[in-house]
Image 1 (cartoon, helix red, strand yellow):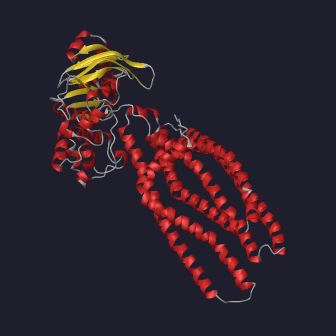
Image 2 (image 1 turned 180 degrees about the horizontal axis):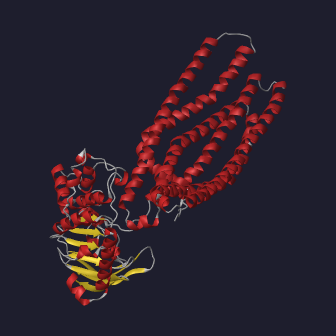
Length: 604
């Protein structure tokens, strides 16, 4: 859901200046260059006046050499200065885009799971790509053009008032009209650009979902519906963009019309001044040139002004990301002692034994229905806990709270007897090993993916972790072994192979707390057997949570918790619960029966 904080233009400018502060030296060079350029360009028509009055009308070439040298010097100076400001402008644009993306990406690293629950991928991608790119362009070049426009316009006004204030007043009187028109169109353009950017986010999200879900769409023969939905978004984008273009199209002709009015007025009054000997022919030609030029910077200003409205909306959206509140945030005192997620102070971290306790915990997602209420659970160091229950019963919530991916809305979670809010997030996360139901691998090699959670790991450590989970057996058969590219999302590997690599990645960290989130539900029986053999070794001596899909994998768990509606309705080991013949017995026997039927059918 998109919510734009409508900051005032002053606040936007303040934020822009903060991001531009590191580049103030380059900006100063650009500013000085543009001021000089605008001054020289404002003076060039004076050279034409001199040529007409001193050489053409008088029919003489006396002093023309000095005139030419002066003209060439001005022209060469313009060329050099234009090169300087374009060069420095490009550097500022790239540096600003880099700075914004770095800041935004850094903020995303600190966000908890809840932030990504609320904000869609397309919403984030639009801000990180097109919005930041637009800001870089308008700040680097838009402000340059505005400075030039203001400097050039000021130079023209100064020269005109020096030559003849009456003719100068003719053009100056048109300025209030221009200001009124600009103020009127400012809100119109800004509102339309906001709508355009909002729909653009939806389109980016549709692209993202379409690409990620392409296989599912093919399987379900859903192509026609996807096309219809995308056409609806595209049509909305077209209507909104056309509306924005119409508003802009109305603005520019008004500027051009004012230009024509000014030119007619200058010609009419200037003709009488020449007849009365008030001004020379060269001065009238100069004023005609200035009248045409007078509206060039205004047209340029209006173009930049229009683009700035779009950038204004983009900056609002990017700032919303950068300044978004953190759902889970360590206190200043905790960060000072333990560091944060990106700058860790490992030397101050206490060792985690693995005792976990939920104390009167309440939790709900994004102000929705409560998932847990007065939940209590105590887990001893080295104990293996299995959680079973229907989808939505609260199994993953309990584990995510234990990992501090979310925090309780009431109550507390204790690690080794201490509320984990009194330690840094990185302290806990560094001691977690987590294997997801659907494994995710990053583009790169097998070696890169195994060492993803421990970048400093040696090759021997990587191979050792792979051997523990029986992944080495298939890895060394590849032509390039551990240097084999896994492809985007691990597409070059089977699901079972990806899961074994994610196991190796988790165990390489040597975590104190291990979580298996239905980690064997999406793999074949052979891979499951390999993982199950390795799991018994991996979980030994570690506090472990297993969210079980196949109940046969949790027979050896120290305790099995049957979860329903966020409450523990049964608790005990496998044999105790089977003898009890309650909910766990029912779940287990039903699944056992289904597995036997599936096996018989596959044999037939």
